Amino acid sequence: MGNARFIFPWLTPFGKQTEKANKMKDPRIAQLAQNLIAHSVKLKKGEVVLIEAFDVPEDLVVELIREAKRKKAIPLVTLKRNRVLRELIKGTTSEHMELIGDLETHRMKKVDAYVAVRGSENISELSDVASRHMDLYQAKWLKPVHFGIRVPKTKWVVLRYPSPSMAQQAEMSTEAFETLYFNVCNLDYARMDRALTPLKRLMEKTDNVRLTGPGTDLEFSIKGIPVVKCAGNRNIPDGEIYTAPVKLSVNGEITYNVPTIYHGTKFENIHLTFQNGKIVKAAGSDTKKLNAILNADKGARYVGEFAIGVNPYITRAMTDILFDEKISGSIHFTPGTCYDEASNGNKSKIHWDMVLVQTKAFGGGEIFFDGKLIRKDGRFVPKSLQKLNPENLKGEQ
Image (cartoon, rainbow, N blue to C red; front, side):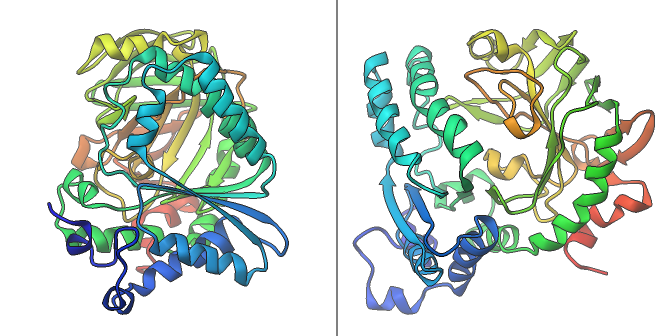
């Protein structure tokens, strides 16, 4: 689609920012930076924040540094490229990944907050990296640094940053995608947080969950597992509430109707069958590779997360998990490791968010808690939960 600065005028390549481009800066970028620093990580005076940017232009990074300084905090910045990451992982060794993991661990231990701005020039950049090398990257670098330190021990937020490839991927015009992006990222997350509270309380009292829909009839327990609201504090875009199933309680089948990219490969029409918590059958557009990933370790065939998506501006699949897992009317049911905040004891090298949308446009479906209908065709039924329906989260009274 050509150069990014002509497709998205507010995106300017590194080192090529002109006076004219400065004048064209979108004020929504400054608002987004303010939201990330003030609302998402709640940065305070004297705290150290690591800003890690992948394949993104400099405007938002600069605004994040400025916002951190306004808080009298200490900003650190690392600029990374996915193509370079691919080259590091290809043909790697255990010793190599462990060395990088040790260095990244040392740095992560020094910071109080972490802001990741993740763009992508090519969503399939890692598609030709061998599974054994991706496993080393996850085990020696990603898991100890991010799941071992960043997630449990820092204030963190991860932001997906737009690019021309994302607009193409979403099958949207440039202007429409730009509007969607800022609507999603700059919405009133405080309103969403309040609206999620009754659902959190209900889930904390729930034992049995049943999900239905085309190719889906699944039951499991969430009894005793903590429930976590996500309203702009961890991911941007955001809009979900998550827990985990009791590890051995999952039985039935589920058919995911949103494509997913994992290890650089796109998977569609994934169908999983569970018995006593374990995935005993898995099929999809690439069944061989799907099963290879699910055989990564003992925990990969058990589920570590159950979440409900509520972002009112995200209504269609974009093959980008930070957006797709927040689709209004969706759930995601995730093979692999659980989060410490909502632990069911399952641990794995993988954490693979797979999404099922239950709105009428995607074929419909229901969620039942202890036999009571909670959501039908993507809309919450009980009066106490109706503030989570899209028109209310948008403030369209």
